Length: 154
Ligand code: SF4
Image (cartoon, rainbow, N blue to C red; front, side, top):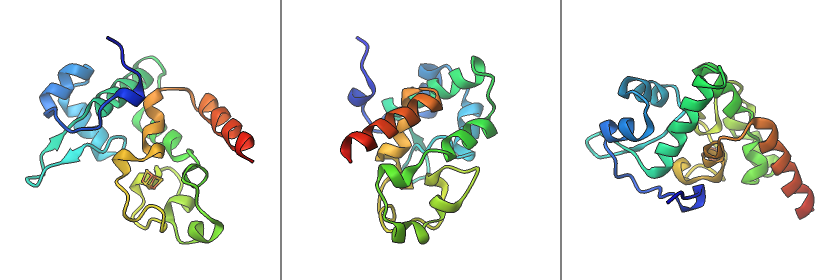
């Protein structure tokens, strides 16, 4: 059965080796994606990573962008950093002024060390912004959808 992203479970249940087998991404590459901020798996108290169905889908998408799209990690990261999180949350002008995610370039918002009030106590793993690239769409389609949503709600 093929499930869409809304049905994928965010529950952390897979070990690194299982995630590697399911996503067909080598363990060392998964570790590298985590180090570079492309993926935020759950961490146990003993600092072990556990992966969810959502993470597996994300890994497959990253693998596709590298293998078929010719992107590298820096390129994917730069692409993620263009997602206008402040529009999706949404954040007020005042919130933005204190948020590093709004000002930083070349790093996605979930890597910001100084987040605005809307994000400070949020688990990024469950956030709509972090979950957007799971759909593995090109950035243009993503932005079109965001603009359409914004226009229809105004
Ligand atoms: S909660 Fe995390 S992923 Fe969501 S907008 Fe804030 S920093 Fe980004």
